Amino acid sequence: TLRKEYLSEDRIQSVEEHHRYPIERPTTSDFGLWRTALFTVFSKTSTLYRPLGKYLRHPPLSYEWLYSSSNDLLFRHSSAPSSSVAIYVKSPSASVSRRNAVHFTFSCTAVDPPVATHHASVTSLTDSSVTVHSFALVPSPPTVLSLQEVIDSFEDHTMWDRFSFDEDGSWLLHALLNGTLIIVHDGSYMPQLTSQACSCGFVLYCSSTDKRAIGSFAEESDNADNYRGEWLGSIGALQVLLAVISTTSVSLDAIPPVQAHCDNMGVINHNHNLTRSLPEKQAQADLIRLCREYHRRLGFSIEYHHVKG
Image (cartoon, rainbow, N blue to C red; front, top):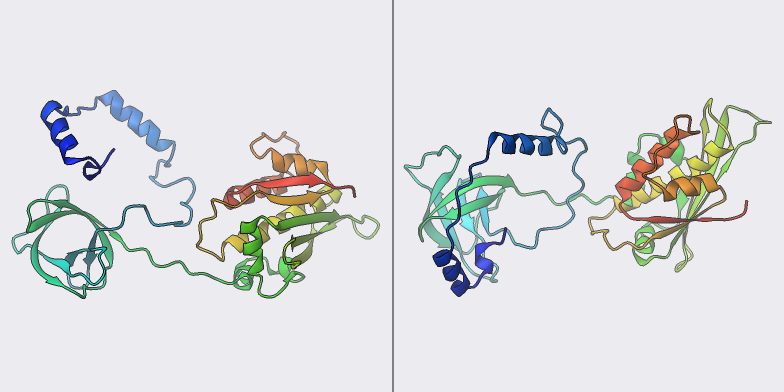
């Protein structure tokens, strides 16, 4: 829907004079179709199947109306520097309508407005009176953690006992944004020592600064083999990437494809076909599905290349 103020006054007058907007009367089947559409997004308990992602950026339109719950004041934000703001108070005779709207009346102007706790959706009635349709809490600024703090927050600390990185690790984000990050990972399985464990190693390297992050870990499993070790290396590298993007609130839409290198074609093919159905007896299906989930969370592409082992 196009906002009315985006149209010129002449255009608005022309539209309003020559067009009569119809009254919508949805039928029973229309409501049924709407419920069906909703259930494709929400479960029957009215919750999302998956939680919403991070708050990435402010919308293109600024929040014009703000509300302070501490003193029950509504005020209109002005983008002009050092300008006063209009303060509105709740009407003495205000009553909540059937649509939960609340009426406010103009009170005064002030240079220093109160601290806003909510955004307000407002419908103007007159020059001195407005109606608030709804409120929404002002989001708190995102907490930015260091790479080490994010790693320390992971549940399985044993995976990171042998993980290290140059300096404070902030270069990983710059390498990711600049397209200079290179990933290499490999797996290991030595049945002559034990058939119940496999291990992996992974390296994240910046080709511009020559800095690197190196990690390795082992897993004890009845399904241990060389193929599982290869997938563990992929998981380790992807978890580092997830940790890196957790250290910033900057939009990651423009991240170029990350280059990754591996000597196992099975890992490469599966990571290039993230939506392909897995066979019923797919080997190491648990790790393949976990890698797919990590790719979904990252939101940017990784190009895998084969290297000889």
